[in-house]
Length: 489
Image (cartoon, rainbow, N blue to C red; front, side, top):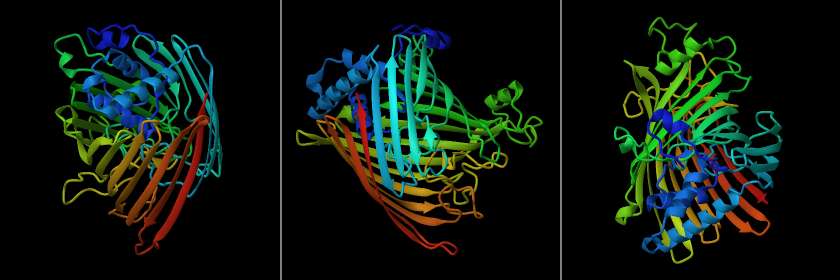
């Protein structure tokens, strides 16, 4: 591995392919990785998913002081070491299969990779070489909501170029420190087919002017949205830069945009206006006809005090839907707190409390409704196949979530959450909202058990959803359940 001497040299630094990425969706695995990061075993950034295996395993190989770690953190280290060795085998053809069925799919999806449809059957194969990684998955779907009954979600063909991985990808992505959802990019919607560029190893800059940033990561997405939308075939552009200036603090900065598409300007000058933020009507001769796109910006943080002996952390994310005077404006907000520890010698746990508000200017008494995740030109909004790309509660929601995770030393886990709040709280009726066109109270409860066997992983869950009534819609109560089996060999 080579250290960077500047911004461009950092991207061009030579290193081998970091191996397959850790996709979002496994809450117990993320719990272990975050525990190791909080105790200084993993020194790089861990809030941008997919997460490269390379820096995670490199940190584990370098770490020696096991004697100073709690027993459950040592267990997590050994689990990650074994999992990483299996996932990063080179020059070996591997196969996997997944089968899932459920009654009443969850309408708001969290970090855990539960089935999206009533029935799913997936087959896949992967191979990793020195510079090339191929991971292909085909999924057949029963009764799909979006009428796409054959999907390539979860596939990627990647090439290593210096310290970058360039890929054609349909992997889920998750940007931010939250556990229930992300305002800017979550796995609530299906993954957007995209060309992606991701940094592999997260070494700090060598230059004294930038070394204070600490370990850092960067990701770029150039995606293609679906044809069946108000502006067909619009593009999705996203960039994220996150860094760890202190072992206890990680900060992320993200920008995303919808632009181009049928009937919209797609030339280089339009893209440049978008990058510079000159994309509002009335700014520098921008009109409805040449407005570059629908752009957002977000900043997030996570601060842990685990190294001080208190296994606690606070985190937050703030996302702007507009700009004013050259700066982001009209923010949505999310704040959370979490704690971890051990129960006896077998179990570790994590709890989290998280609150999110998806109205613009959420902290004001006169917050703005029908603003977040919506746009006057891109009228399908910040959505892909009618599911929000950001927070699953969609626009104008205010929700709070309490979650709990238990993981034993064999990777078996129990997890559950209670989410409550109000959806689509104000403004005129909004038909674009993916959950309800009118205000409704919501209550979601789910419990999931994941068990490891010699023949794979079996996961099953039960849940309950209640959507309150309003003047035009009756209340509804839905019980749901799913079972899912995965095997990787």
